[in-house]
Length: 115
Length: 114
Image 1 (cartoon, rainbow over the protein chains, first blue to last red):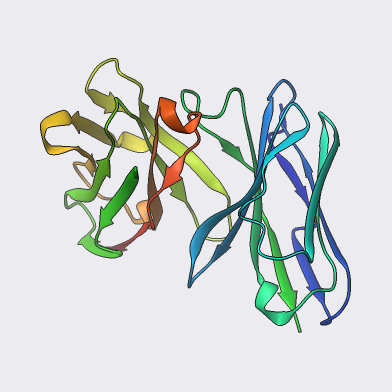
Image 2 (image 1 turned 60 degrees about the horizontal axis):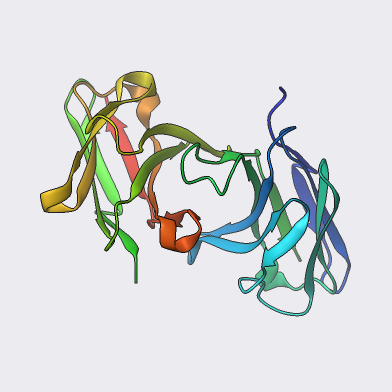
């Protein structure tokens, strides 16, 4: 398996623009997590899905953020409109079960810079 | 509430020296415990895990950790540090009452000096 695949690896955009981050989880994994990592706040769980259904989106910072999982092999995280404070590395992770036994497999992340 | 505390946000060791990264957890029920490593510009990678079997767990790259229930600790060790061990290390815990979702420590940055 190629692991969790995220695209793009780097994204630079202007404030106010829409940004879409993409994730392909490992085949067979039933949980998908979106995390944000910054120096100031560390790793933050934004939202997670179980069998394509959003379970907990309490970590989504604002209505500007939305996430979808239309099928078991694809998920998106969208920011509209983007702001400079959204600059961070966004990670997608997937797991079999909630990760409590097998742990998570992370993608390589998308480094987002909003100028 | 369940939590994870990593003592020391930055640890520096000499090449060949013992690596000791500390992790304490708070859980009223039996936990599962994990250590992850993040190399620069990469995602997190599972180093090792404790899931109620042997209390001494061996992982990749020569790392190991020991679950000590009486001390609520799960410290990560490696007998001899290598330059390639320089990275960010994260401890995480899960427990049945939280749907086995991982709760993360803030991370410890390990520097290895030549």
